[in-house]
Each structure stands twice: as structure tokens, then as C-alpha cells.
Length: 325
Length: 278
Image (cartoon, rainbow over all chains, first blue to last red; front, side):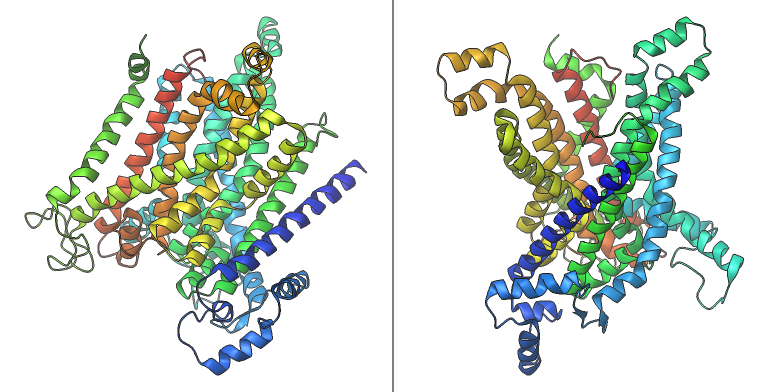
């Protein structure tokens, strides 16, 4: 019951945020230099005047601005994100076709970075005063400072060009015609490099967060009690410290989901991964603003979904939180 | 202990400072070493590093000098990182100060606004803003500032909330100082150290953002930047890895140095906190 109410509240909030983004998008189109009709058609610059007139009529650009806004918002409410003239397809269909690839990539990278980050962070916390602990933190700082797209390119050079272990481009072997398990293995092989390079940066963040959170938790009274009654350090570390340290990590992990969607734009561009990030790059190259704004909207929606999910996980992990928000 | 002695106690911070100073010197001396535009074709294309004198890092796909590009690019990265952080501070500090000082409805409204910006994926928003405003140094600075101010607002708000009921603030109120004076003269100076630490880390993030934007082809077409160099060499990565390698290394070192300096500043400015905190 409580969950149902919570979900309804969060969904309402999500609708408000998405509504604001739609309005924001609308004004961006009008801010762009040139005729909005040309902007929407991705044809900034010289075009056929007849075509533009037809577009202006179609988008209602001859109407007052509030009428235009209304048409735009009500269109999106009915999932009409306009038409990509460059790709000759409705924007919504284009994005939906690319969504599964992005979900697979970001989902894998998210789980990978969280698992490895928590592992590395708890090791670093347990060895806070030893060189091995410092080494983990130095590596985390290094990954944190490394540009995502560069580490992706260097991984291609190392693992695809020189070692020839893993494919550098795409999501599956073109023309191989795999099905079933063979296809899954093929996609998995293509997934390794993009997912790992995307995960590195976030792994670094989670490592640092886990260490800080665990060191804070280890100063609590219940830890002293556990130590005083003679529990082994490993049990204290796992049952008393890590469990309590996990809560803030879950919250922050949810907040980082937005960054991961952004990071996927770079990763997908480098690896030609057929998701919405790659689509965004194509839209940029072709100055296809309508498509660009559609992807922007959906990336925000994706972040909101991630946030709601982590919120639910948080509540499952800590039953004490009920009506906090 | 003096400020610098505390800073230098952190060995990493000292290394970071040395790297940072080197990169600043690189940026300043770029016109001395390479007075010509880094965009000019000066040798045959795809020259590997250390092959011809005067081209220690080789040439790119268009026969441009990679070393010249690297040095001129340092200037752009540092400039955009610094200016966009300043602009972000100019948005975030006042918002956070007002929200934290007044509380109540104003705080609620401002925090909803901040949350909205935090929900939108940063990088996607920056891409859309630069694409629509057309790539230029100004549009890149504006876009980066617009996506990076929320953490500043949150930090300043939290500081103001914890300081606004301190005795010295109550005293200032009793002697009849205006809210404006209390915010600017009493509380704000006491929040400076965490702001400075956060700002140094934000410059690092801004440099990463700028390089990512220009990697995607959204850099200012008139200035050479590290991200652009990597983006332009992306398609020839199989033939010429060095074209992407060196600019990326430059970004990595700069961002790393700024993070180390930020940690050192944190140690030096907040000596009360234990070194355990990371």
C-alpha cells in the first residue's frame, strides 16, 4: 500500500519534470538560429522555399506562440515527437528501436561498476592504513580522471587492433546470422569493451564512496560493541559495517545513473553501439535537432526511471524509511 | 602550521601542483614555441612521433603539428575550465545562500529548481545547449556552467543552514545589520573554504566535459582543443594511435592534477577534519 502511494507520488513528480523538459525543448527550438521550420526539418541553411512553407504550415508556425506551444506539448503527450526528415522515420520509432541496446549497455555497466566499486571500496576501507589500500585509491583516482572516450579508444587499440581478442565495433557480427545462444554469446563478446570502459569511471566513484561510507560506519558505537564482544574483524566488516554503509551508496548510485546515460553517448559513439547515444551523435552530425531533442527527452526519462528504481531498492534495503520524503 | 606547509604535507597534492604549473606554463609558452597557428599544415600527414626534428609527437591526418596542437590546446582547456566554473559559482552561490539563509518557501522553491537541473542528464543537456546555440567558446562555457551549478547551490545552502543560527550571526542581527550584509559579510566568508575545494574539483570536471563536447565535434571551430584532436583522429585509430594517445594523456594529467590539488586544498583549509576522510 505504502509502495503504491510512493510510486504514484514519484510518477507524478516525473510527469512534472518531463513536462518542464518539453517546454524547455520547445523554447530551445525557437532559440536556434534560423527558421524554426528549417530547424525542425534539420535543414538549417538554404532549402527549397516551397518545402519550408509547407513545414511552417504543418508545424503551425504561422500561429501565435502559445498555440504552437500547446500543439507541441499535446503532440508529445500522444507520443508524437515529430518526424526525422534526415532518417525518414518518426523520431519516436527511431528512439524506441535504439532503446534496447542502450538499456543493455548501461544496465550491464551499472551492475558491473556497482559490484566492482563496492568490492574495491570495502577492500580499501579494510586496508585503510596499508599500502594496498592506498594503491586501490590511487587507481580509483586515475580512472576518475581518465576521459571516457579516450579509455574506450585506447581499449580498441589494445584489445582489438594489437591483441585481436575482442571486436571493436557494433553489437553483433554482421552477416553471421547467429540465433539463440550463439547470438547471445556474440552480443556478449561485443558488449565487453563498451560496458567495461563505461563502467571504469563509475567504478572509481563507487569505490571512493564505499570507502568513505565504510570508514564513517566503522566509527559507530555498534561497531565498538561488536569488537568488544570479540567478533572477528571479517564478520564485523561484512555484517556490521558494509551493511550500514551500503545505504548512502544506493542513494548516490541512483543519482549517478544520469551521468551514465550521458557517458553512454561517448561510449556508443566510439564503439558504434547501436543505442540512443550513437543516434544522438548521428543527429548532431546531421544537425537533426528534432531528433536531438527527442533523445534528450528520453535520456531524462531514463534517468527518472533509474531514480525511482533506486528509491524502491533503498526502501527495501532499509525498512526504517517510510514517509521520509 | 602555515597554509602551504599543510598543503605540502599531502604528497599527492604537491605532485598535482607541479603537473598543473607545468601545464599552465605550456599554455603560456605555446605562442613562443609555436607562433604559427596549430591549424596550419606544416609537414606530410601521419608522421609518427620522434621521426623528424621539430615534430616530437608527429603530425595528424592533415599534416598539422601534434605538439603545437597540444600546447595551444592546453590554453583552451584551462580557460574554459576556469571560466565555466566561475560562472557556475555565480549561479550556485547566490541561489544556495538565499535558500539556506531564508529557508521556508523560498528554500523549497529554489531546491525544486535545483533538483530539476540535477535530474536532467548533465552531458546530454550540455550537448543540446551547445548544438542549439552553435559551438563557440561562449556557448561551451554557458552550457558547462548551466549543468554544473547544482552541487554548488546544495553545498552553499547546507553551509548557510548550519551557520545561520550561530552566535555571531545572531549578534549581527541584534546590532541591526541587514540580511544582505549578514549574508555577504558574516556568513559567506565562513563558507569559502569548502567552496574553494569544490571549485577546484569542478574545474577538473569542466575540462572533462569540454573535451567530451569537442570530441563529439561540438568544440569551437576556431580554437584547437585536446578533445577535437582525439575526435578528429578517431577514425584513423588503427593507423595512428599516437594522434589520440597524447591529447588524451594531457587531459588525464590535467584532470588528475586538479583533483590532487583539490584534495590538498581540502587538507589545508579544513585541518580539523581527520585525514581518514577521502
